[in-house]
Image 1 (tube, one colour):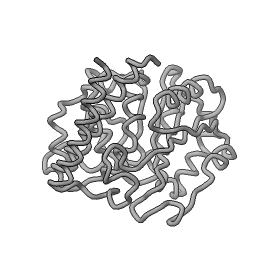
Image 2 (tube, helix red, strand yellow; image 1 turned 120 degrees about the vertical axis):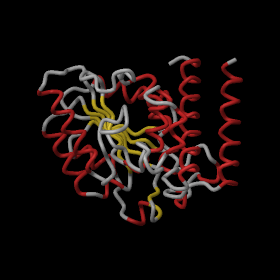
Image 3 (spheres, rainbow, N blue to C red; image 1 turned 90 degrees about the vertical axis):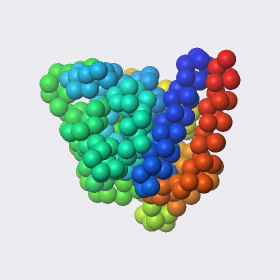
Image 4 (cartoon, one colour; image 1 turned 90 degrees about the horizontal axis):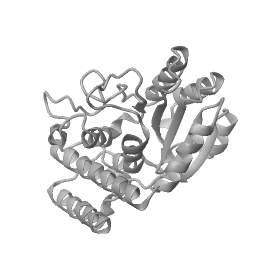
Length: 284
């Protein structure tokens, strides 16, 4: 990846984060912390990796993304708006009456959303079904990506889905774990420790990689390894920072499900706009 390509992705990630802050502030509710932590992987998927067409969201041969941790919908909506599936101005309607951008993604109303999610554990199950369905239909070029949360994998249904993916050798399935170590009640290690995630998924038959989830070179290398893997699904552990990009939200579980007030909004926007200005300066 060239430096120019990396800077472009960093700008997309910054725009995604700005959308998260603007939408949750407008809604006066939502989940900013775990949305901010996945900005890099979303920008990589939508602007470098996935075959999608904003003009034809239901294109049968598109790649799919399932946001299994559906409460991070502000990040998904922001990424979809940035990619051109709907106007960015619509982000300000998050969770408003009559808006199609509700607290969890709805595939029946939002262009670009491939699966309705919210009940933790169900999204990854649907992603497995999509991957198997693509194989049954002979759609060999279709790849399915799923993002699960580290708190989410405390759900037993996730492990049933992982067993299913391995059993059916779903090498067209790539699962990302957002390992930011915090859930709504605090540290995952204290609430329900799922470590070591890598050894457990290896035992379940996955090709497992652990990377810095904010580093594009590492994300690219991991996805390339997914493409090269045959006969088993891939599980990429994204070591991330909850609330990434907004100083007072970083590594603070209080921002799992709390929207920024006016003063917090102003601080966050100042920081993100400064980061964007720096990227534009580097871009020249």
